[in-house]
Structure formats: C-alpha cells, structure tokens
Amino acid sequence: MRYRSMIFGAALVWATAWSSPSPAQAGFKGVDFPTADGLEARADLYEPEKESPTLILLFHQAGWSRGEYREIAPKLTKLGYRVMAVDQRSGGGVNGVMNETAARAEEKGRPRGYLDAYADLESALMYARTKLHAKRIIAWGSSYSASLVLRLAAEHSDEVTAVVAFSPGEYFKQSKGPSYVEGLAKHVKQPLFITSAKQERGQVKPIFDASPSQKKILFTPASRGQHGSRALWEKWPDHDVYWTAIKGFLTEYAPARPAN
Image (cartoon, rainbow, N blue to C red; front, side, top):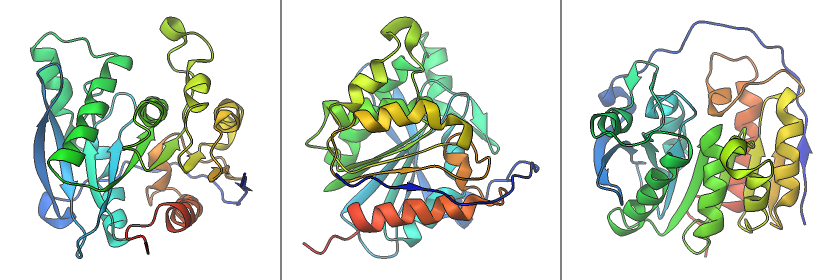
C-alpha cells in the first residue's frame, strides 16, 4: 500500500469572495439530467480541447452550488479532463451561481437533506456513462459530498475509476451512526485522494486509513488550509500546494488519457 502524507507551508489570509466568470469565458454549457425520483438536475459541462475518455464529476459542499467549481473546472480541462459540475438538491448558492436542482426539489416538495442528495450523485454517474459516454469517471466531492462520493465508489465500484474527497467526515451521525463513512471507506478500493484543512486531519485520517486501496494519498497542509474544494481557489495563498498534490495524484493514478 502506498501512503503519502504531504506537508507544505503557507500562511492563510482571508479575502473577498471570488467572482464567477461568464459561461463563455469559462467554456462550459448547462445541461439537465433526470434523477431516479423524477427531478431534473442541473450541471455545467466543461470540455477539454482534445477528446478525453476520462470525466470528473464535481459535487459541491453544504449550502452551495456548482458555482464552487467555476474557477476550478477550467483548470481541470486544461489538464485534459472532461468535467461536469453538479448541483445537488442539498445546497444554495455560491460565487453568484444559485443551485437550480435545490430550487426544483423545493418546488416539488422533495426532501433536501445531505443523504437525499445521494440520488443526484447516482443519477449524475449514470448520465455520465450512458449519455456522455465517459469510459472512466472520477468522483470528486467537497465536505458532505466528499463523504457521499465514498458511498458512490463503494456501491459502484465498476463505474467509479477514482475518488477525490476534500474534507470528508461523519456528517450523517444522527441518522447513520458515528462510523458510517468510515465503514463506507472500507469498500473503496479505487485510487483515493483525501485532503482537508490542517485542523480537520483528525476527522479525515480514520476514513483514509479504513480504505484498503493500494493507491491512496492523504494530503495535509502545514498551513491552516481550507475546508472543501475551495482550498483550490486562487484567493488563498496556499492554493498552489493543494493543486500540486491533486495534480500529482491525477497524473499518477487517474490520468486524463491513460497510456493503455
């Protein structure tokens, strides 16, 4: 088993929120896809310059939307990946982008808790495989959705190629018990990347340790860091060390265009 805990130094400085680029600037198009329970979920689809067999599904953190990835997704396409940033029904808005799936779920009177959002993850996975014809799919989550992508990988091991989890945790204790996510991680054998803010290492390490994957990386910054995928936003002075870590993982274990 390969285990690496990378430590980097950087000071944390709080700044104003990142403003979203326009769709034309970001190079994406909006798509709707059906969920198993009859909702139309919304996502942004980003395409690289050259066709790629590998697609990254991006899921946002609590209270937010696909806008979490307006800055991040274009950088992933430059690395050669197709990217789909998804609105889950549990969320709100960020970076000027409102969560359309959540609004539709509210309109239809559907529950919008963290675990309810799992239906959106499964449906996005199905859409990516059947409609977008992705041959390799990386499931990427932020905060509560980082825990849900571990479930997705555990329950769809033949369809999820690799997992990226920014700040996973036991966010479902009340309904699922104190070790639910750790239990899910025991079934994640795919390449796995887990990271967090420095102070969250204690919550993410048991989840990381539970996975039997032989290709996994735990990245912990020496600086304060950030909760969730926003750690990659340029507004944070240590965003570059997070990018170094995730690029290293993707290049080694889940390349956009594998050699074989």
